Length: 452
Image (cartoon, rainbow, N blue to C red; front, side, top):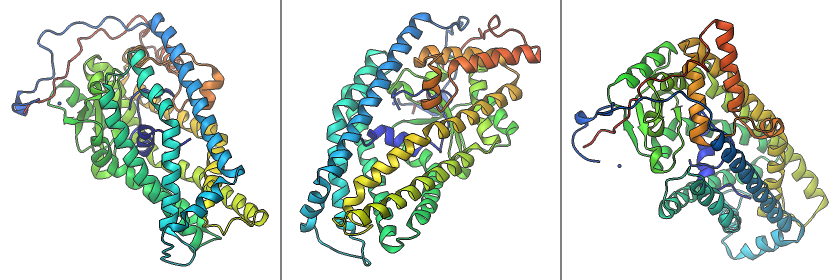
C-alpha cells in the first residue's frame, strides 16, 4: 500500500532532520505587534516536578503501540493484496491496454511518459482510496483518542491534501525517471537510478527546511534568551554553523515534543517544537539540542544518505534481475519500460525494503546512540538527559520497554528504556550524581512567539 501523504512527507525530510525521539508510531507529523515585544519567560513561571515515568501513560503507550502495529500490518496486507491482484489477475495488462487511448508520444524510443504517468496516477489514487479509511483511523482517530493530536478534522484533511499533492509530484517524477532510464539504458538503468537518488536526496535534505516543512508548520525565529544562547554555544562547540534557531508550532497539530537540526550548508538550522520549549527546563532543552548537534559533529546526515542510497541501489539491482527473468518467462510484457511492469517493480522494492529494514534500522539506532554519547560528553548533564527522556516518554506516549523483537525490526532510535539505562550507567561510570535522584527541577522558560 502506498504510504500515507504525511508519511511520504516525513520520508522526504528524513535525511534533512533527525528527531530527538522517534518511536514507530503515526503520531503527527499563528499573532500580531512587533517582534521586539517577544519574551521567552512566563510572567509567573512554575517549577517542574522531578521527572518520573507515568505508569498509567505507559499502560496507554503499550496499548497505543500495539494498535498502530496491527494497523501497519493491515496496511501492509492491503498493499500486498492490491499488488497481487494486479500481478496475478491480468489486471495490470488490462489497465495498460486500456490506456492505449493516451497519446503514445515518445521523446526517445521505448519511453512513453504520458502512458507511464497515466498508469501511475491510476495506481496512486487506487491505493489512496483503498487506504484512506485506515489512514483516517490511524492518523486522526487514534491520536485524538490518545490525546496526541490537537488537530480538527478539517486541519487533518488539509494536511492530507498537501501531503497527497507532494507525494504525487515527487513520486510521479521518480517513476518517470526510472522508466526513462529503463528505456534508455536497459543494462545499467539501476546504477543511474541509484546515482540520481543520491543527488535528489541530498537536494531535498538541503531544501526541506525552506520549501517542505513550512507547508505544514509555522517556523518563528527564536528570540534572544537563555535557550537561544545555549543552543548557539552548543552549535559553536560542535563546529556547526547554523542559519538560525526557530520555534515550530507543533502544538497546532500535536501534544508531542521534538527538536531537530535541519538542512545542509546554507539552509542548516536548529528547530525546536513549541511543545518542547513550553514544558522542559533549559538544561533539558540544551541536552536535546546537543544530541541533534551530535549528528552534525559526526557527519551523520551524509552517512545516512549514503547508507540509504546503497540499500536502494541493492533493491534496484534485484529489480533488474527480477524484471529480466519475468520478461523472458511472460511475453505479455512489451519490454522493460512497459508500464505493466510497475506493480512488479513496486512489489520487489517493497519486499527488499522489508528484508533490509532491520539492517537500516540497526544502523540508525547505532547513529542515534552515538549522538546520545556526544550529548552526555559535551554537556555533562546526565540528570537533564535522563529527565528529558523521561518527560518525552510521558508526553509523546512512547513505550519505554517494547518487545526486543519489535525494537530490532521497527525502531530507528533506541528505545527510551535503553536510553534511560544508558544515561544512568553513564552517571555511575563518570561519577556524576544519580540522575534518578537529581532530576532537573529548574523553572521551565515558557516560549511566547513574537507578535507582529
